Amino acid sequence: MSSRYLFAMVFQACLLMLVGCHSAPTLPPTLAADAIPEFSALSLSGRVMRAPSALPEEDVMVLFGFSPEAQADMDQWIAVAAEQGLSVIEVAVLHDPLARPFVGMLAGRMRQKTPTESYDQVWLVTDDADRLAIWIGEHDPDHAYAYLLDADHRIVQAWLEGYEASGFHNEHELPMQSISDAIAF
Image (cartoon, rainbow, N blue to C red; front, top):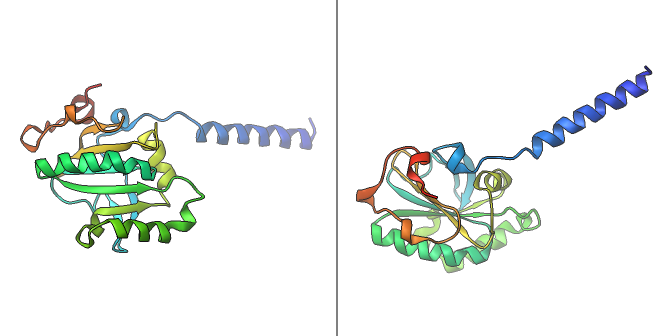
């Protein structure tokens, strides 16, 4: 066996392993974990936020959106959270690599529509966008993905198909078991 042939075989095997590892199916968060993953974001106030440690130490609704159209879902979730007295963190995930160079311009537009006192509750994710998209299992970029977290930042309930308030639990009904028990499909 020539060294060229051996090199070609090893190269192909490595390439197949690399492609296979990268495209391996991932479990949706409801099956994979009971906490959101760590990720970095930039708040509209310019602060670097590191989740989950930067989240409030109280029950909180975390909303992920992948397009401006997801804002309609987010607005509905924000209204429900306000009725329940919950804090809300809005996370705009810039999953499209073509949009990432324009993060400053996008943040400026978002600031125009956001009250100044809410700047630290609106986050933009660029560097960890691909990881979050895989973790969330982005089905429709026009929907918001809502996660209700307890004070310890554990997922209590998740809504992965857009706004569905019918399954919402208020703060007095929060089940504090793991996500596999809390989510009804």
